[in-house]
Each structure stands twice: as C-alpha cells, then as structure tokens.
Length: 354
Ligand code: NAD
Image (cartoon, rainbow, N blue to C red; front, side, top):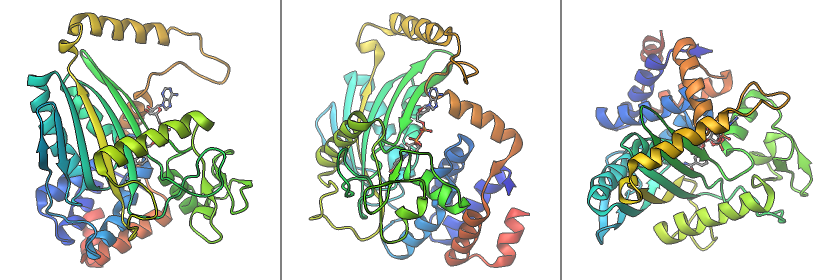
C-alpha cells in the first residue's frame, strides 16, 4: 500500500497515545518514524511500531521519561534517558548540547539508557541545522547480538550506527548516517517481510556460509549479519561499541549484561562549533567548494551522477512527500495488529487511515 505521510503520522501518534504516551510525546515519536520513512529508511520508520508497543506493554519502554543530566562538567555532560522514547530523550539531549556549545565551543555528551533512538541522522540534522558539526557513536543492547566480528562466525555486536554531520550555509547539512553492519538489520527485516533476498555478502547461515535468505536472522538455526567493508567497517563498529556503549553507556553487548529482549541505545555525541576553530567563513567556503568539486566528477558506468552523504535521503523525501509512503502488506498487518494491542478498535483504525 501507499499512504500519505500526514495520515500515517496521525495514525502512528494515536497508537502511542492509546498505548499511554501523552499527545506531544506521541506526536514527536510519530514524526520521527514517518520522517525516517520519508527519507527512505523504512528500516527505522513505522515498521518499528510493533516492537515499541510490545516494549511499552512489558515495561521496557517508559513513555513519560525525559532526558536527565546526571553529570555536568562544562563541556562534558552525561545524560540518562531513563529507557524513554529515544526520539524524545535524544532530541532533548541535543537541545542541551546545543545550548552548552555556544559557551564552550565543543561539547562531548554521553547519552545512555535510551529506548531505540531510531534514525541517528535526526540528531545530527538537529545540530547541522543549528550550524554545528556533530559526530555520533552508538551501540545497541538489550537483546541478543546479531552481527559477527570480521573473521568470526558468531554474533557479538549489533548494527552499531555511526553518524557525522557538517552544516552548510543555505542548504541542508551533509549527513553521513549509517549502520556499521553490511546493511541495517531493519533492512533485513523489510526484506524478510517482503519475502525478498538480501544483497550478496551481507549474511551468513549457521555454518558461516554466505546466504541471501533474511530468515536466518529470525528463524533457528540462526546465522549472522556481517560488518560493512570487512575489517574497516568492523573496526568502526568496535569503536561505536566501546565509545557509545563502553564510555557513554557502561553497557556493551557482553553476555554479563541483561538481554531482556528490548532495544537500548547508548550514544557518545561530539558537537563542534566551527566558529571556535578557524571561523565559519573559511570552513563554509571549503565545504561548498569541495562538494562542488566532488560533484563535478564524470559519472562512472551505471551511475547518473555523484552525490554527497545525505542527498539520497533528500531525494527520497521529495519523492515520498509527493507520492506517499510505500508499506509492504506484512509490515502493515503487523502495524494494525500493534494498533489493536495498543487499544484501538478496528473502526478507529479504519477511520484514521481512510
Ligand atoms: P544507507 O546505507 O542507506 O546510507 C548510509 C549513508 O550513505 C547515508 O548517509 C547516505 O546519505 C549515504 N549514501 C547512500 N547512498 C549514497 C550515494 N550514492 N552517494 C553518497 N552517499 C550515499 O544507511 P543504513 O546503513 O542502511 O542506515 C539506515 C538508518 O538506520 C540510519 O538512519 C541509521 O541511523 C539507522 N540505524 C539505527 C540504529 C539504532 O540502533 N538506532 C542501528 C542501525 C542503523
């Protein structure tokens, strides 16, 4: 099916208010999820609703939690998310960092114990639009690991996202925002839902043999998702685990920590004020001219043109705002079922999506 983004956001927000969230919180979470869909990341969009509703009902996700500063040393801050919606506590943590960086020029912030932060680029974009550079190292715990280390067969980490954002004058920021696994786990889930194979070189089965079947991540005997870019992607994933998980969260994917089947993100975030370095003018000149230089490349065979990080998401946004958001049938059934579990009747659901 194809659905208009406003209608989908209203439906999503009603699911969360029905599950116990206040209207402003439900609307913020809905907006984040639908924006992920609009930007082409269905892996981190409304397809997450069933697991969020399940985590609210089993007490793993606290709908009323807000970002709490638990340590303040000027340019170094620690924030606890109290297992609240990552979309709310993550945005609040960035608000705090953006206030502080005006005075300190650089902020290093640990954000711990957030329920799923969703699309990490959202926090980078918040910094970029305010004129700041940001870097985000994130780990994912609370459930069994899914990603094997380079050279290994067993799962030891999760999809540990990394994000780096550079602001631009009169333009959207440059946004590198990615899972450090070969593809985001949510993309394996979407392929599984659609009954489609994943690209080659992404998954191995329980014997460590390459497979394109996404079911190995959801049905026994389990296989594993590999890191992107061999040892280099693996290395970056390790740094996300140790900086996001170890330094900020004090909770890495080791088996000694609990794994009750929820999704917890920890994030180490650096926010830099370009004005505190060489100054804004020279930096922006370099950014603008360098992007122009990159994009002036003759396209290689099979490519229409060269893009910079963040551009594919902008293109998807333009397209999906106009044409609506596609949702596969299996995911849609899962979302409707979750709406029912949250307390909406079939009539209410029909009225919301009509
Ligand atoms: P992706 O592979 O689609 O894109 C990764 C990056 O590459 C993006 O910055 C994109 O702009 C850039 N890119 C893509 N094509 C490009 C091109 N042709 N030219 C230049 N740049 C290009 O992203 P992904 O790895 O599938 O991650 C999807 C989302 O999943 C991200 O938003 C990430 O934050 C999120 N995620 C979240 C968690 C979590 O626990 N919260 C875990 C993993 C991933």
